[in-house]
Image 1 (cartoon, rainbow, N blue to C red):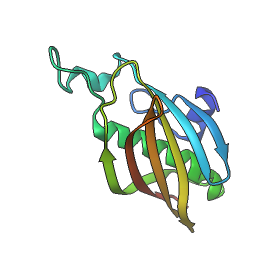
Image 2 (tube, helix red, strand yellow):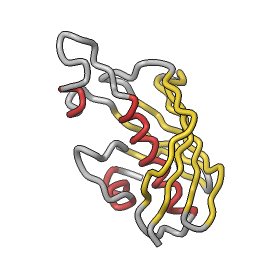
Image 3 (cartoon, one colour):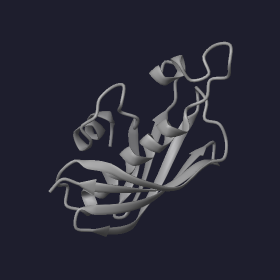
Length: 140
């Protein structure tokens, strides 16, 4: 899915849209990309100059939730908007910096009715940088 298809799948726009492309989507699994650039608005206030530029963990989790939403829509029939209602086991193992390509991989661990749980991992250069399980609730 390119960026236009991503925008159709989740009704978010700049500066909240944090998924640039879906690389793979097959049944209960997804692989997506977030290109991290120095122009992201959160870098203006998160460790401002001369500090190190580091993507906030909350923004990594939001990226994961958006990827989970794209995946869960297909599993739950593509109905409604997904809302983040839970985050479990979030771990941040390495810093994500401007210039990084954050690859997010997710797999549905549970889906029923309008609730979906997705296990996600984030990688930069094949190094695990973050992981979490997110729970989404969808409008019916």
